[in-house]
Amino acid sequence: MLRYSFVAISIVAVINLLLTEVFLVQILLAICVVTSLGIAIIWPEPLPPPPPPDLWSDAPETKDRETKVCSSCGKAVDKKWSMCPYCSKRV
Ligand SMILES: [Zn+2]
Image 1: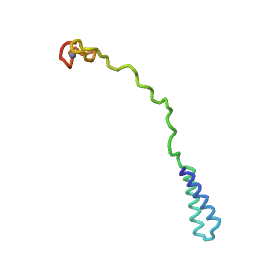
Image 2: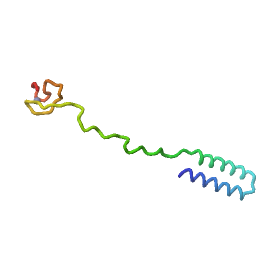
Image 3: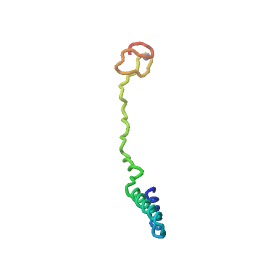
Image 4: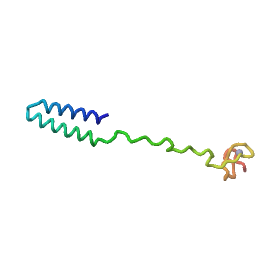
């Protein structure tokens, strides 16, 4: 969008350059045309293209920690634990 406004500026400057007869104004308009056209040509795209929608894979369904249930209080404890952290008895 900004690129088109620079193109419009250069077009208006070219029209002014054709209409004016003052030498200083002609020089200024020529500078304006060159810079605005140059910016319009080399201006980068404002946003990179959006990433593909399948970039992020779904989270794994399974849990990453193996759990078992405490035999005395019934709460879930880590499988490698030998003592229950809730009731402090052997699982
Ligand atoms: Zn317990």
